[in-house]
Length: 496
Image (tube, rainbow, N blue to C red):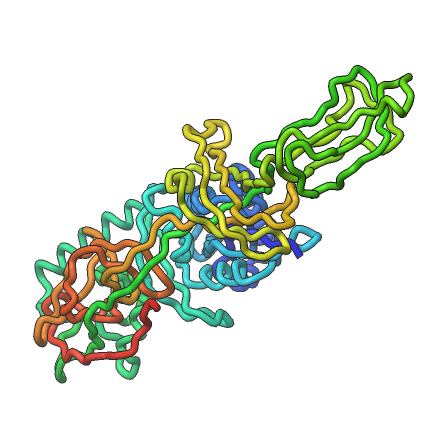
């Protein structure tokens, strides 16, 4: 089975059964029109629709940026198209976007967790909205003119591990959120927070509302209202940051090629091959006999020896015994100098900027074992037509590797150790990322600069100290200055 990595966009229509029940013919006609617009934008952004089922559409893209741009264009176009349609008759897609490893079937359909997660994220999106996985957020951040609302780690049906997710926020929504946030900071009492209706645990709000309440609480969680706590302080799990180590890596794919090839052509006009003394992939030293040849018309007793000009591996043999060769014929032999191979790859701009000669790599040939390697050359500037550049990765122990084999390489770009906290502790507000820190029985918001991630843990470059007590699972139920009961928690996820 062929595997690949792709950005997967999953979409379906909100309330499709209700729309069909109201007016089947009109709904199906307008769905076909919307689907045509959907497909058009997918093609415009270099994507491909690979599956449909009723009102659901699945598409793949080679780039997360292109996938998100297509999704935004579709939603904006359909929203404008339905502006004059009564609200209860509007056809609105909700969308999920994920980057993942998928299996490509012979009919072009894609299967695997990469597709399943995108489909589950779509269920977290609002009508006309888009929900993306953290892998997508990291790839598109600062590249697309929209904002993002961190909705935290999500448990998705039939997905064994939590998926950190974000909702796309259009510029107008981000402006409104900032305005409401300012109002709340000016007028809200310090001990107020958002509580659900009676009987529902307060922690359930983490997947419902943005950290600053306001318009998001009003729109997304009907029945939630700001009330003052009446019975004691909220118990909150806290722990100091721990020391974690992080890897910054890039994945590239390409083809195995000889680093340098030398053609062997006898210095004769026409000749006949009498015998071949070597074989493909055989190791030879400079001066070794490769073949015996004779000038056309001369007796075999006048045979000449063709010798290897350099040491290396025999890459190709261009003739068999008995064949007649001329200057226009292919080289009699091609020698791979010193038996050295490279991985030749075309790399997109975003990855190219992170690569540099000397970085270590681990290469995995198709169907083979891991091999050590090192980035040898990075071609800059990139090709403006393809928006990519050429990279060569040296393969240090080629073994019986053959040229033309497809391979992937994981390039180690950086690695460092430092303070780390769970990803769920980090919130995103109008002024950037922050964490809540317990100061006695109250909490304060601390702006932080974050870095690399490893699993469910994120590096904190600045903003907290090793002895600070950080709220491990921040959420919309907390406010700066709120009274809490800190509960020290041990044994939460750590980077090994």
